[in-house]
Amino acid sequence: MIHFGRTALVGAFSMAIAMPALAQDKTEISVSRFFGSCEADYGDVTDASEGRGECGIVTALINEFNATSDKYVAKEEVVEWPGYDQLTARLRNGEPPTISVMHQSILSDYASRDLLMPLGEALEKAGVDLADITDAAREGVTKSGDIYAMPFDTLGWLWHTNTNLMAQADLMQADGIPVMPSSPDEMLAQARQFKEATGKPYLCESSVGGAQGYARTLFTLLYQQDHAFFADPAKIDLSADATRNYIDLFQTLYSEGLSSTNYDYSAATAAFPQGECGIYIMGTWLIDSYQKASTEDGALKNGYYVQPFPQLFGQDGLWSDGHSWVIPRQELSAEQHEAAIAFLTFLWDNNFEWARTGHLPVRKSIIESDAFVALPARERLDRVAAHGKAFPAAVKRQFTVTDVVGEEMQAAVNSQKSADDAIAAAEKRINDMLARAN
Image (cartoon, rainbow, N blue to C red; front, side, top):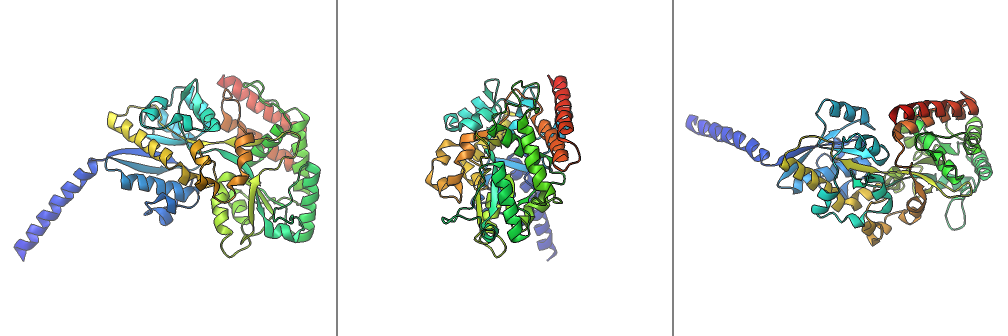
């Protein structure tokens, strides 16, 4: 017994030594991402097709990469959205992640300071067909003539609608499509009709700490009024009547109780499927989650319809951005660089799975595929691809610009500042910042 026990201990000890050695045979890289944490639900899922929503799909993608690769392992690092302060600090300290997710709107800030590795040549050598990248995605990741990121998706600003509530307000067409406004006056009339019939606000708004939402809606309506607010990429111009048209519309919605007034992003995102409002203005990333909710018991059951933000003015246009993956500038071994490119190539190969979130894929071949077209509501998202607009690439500090514009528009819409004061403050804050950045 004693001999047997000792032999077992020796064997176990030998295995304990051998197992780390086997693990070390795989080259490890770190992957920093936002999109939330959902280890409890998806920590053991190694088939990306089983993921749901942004968090579930990206977690399953990383798990599948690790489960199917015999050479590499990606260590997931979840950061709080948007995570750029942490990334900048890690770059400053010389300890960046091997790979990081990054909005295309912020790419210029890092690429212009030589903080990112160019990727075009390496991706092409790894078998990525660069000609298959959509025009919008390619423009988003190309800086100074080179590709600095693996594009992941194209985002757009949408009109998520509860058709069960819209039916109560007699705002449904005979073909089952909700009535959509085509002007600010129509939007106000429909909002009043909706509240009169349901007793609920027409819009769910992320009005507490939701500055970026205000900005994205403003940018959408500025594009629709053909106002080039960044004609000079070093100076924002919000002085046109187009900005005041936005403020007047949403200030009226807010003051008449046609929009919710006390939700932050999480509360607004939860309130919509719970039937607390008719429409939620938010992005493509919620489609999969709401589509799932519409198949379950609740206020949204069999009652979810999504389409791009309606055209309220003479020219079509929508706020747009995109996620991408970058390799921050750092010293990598040949094996680590190979592993990083292999991970990015894996994401490229599985771009369809990520597109199930609701985001548009970055591959032309996927957009044209029967599998993508068969996904719910995708036939209605062509306006995002056709009319989605981003800032000119030369505009720096785009994420901060969006935050500042949102903060000042939020103050104007909530009547905490006059329209003139909010516009003047936004222009001064942004233009002072851009003067320092250029």
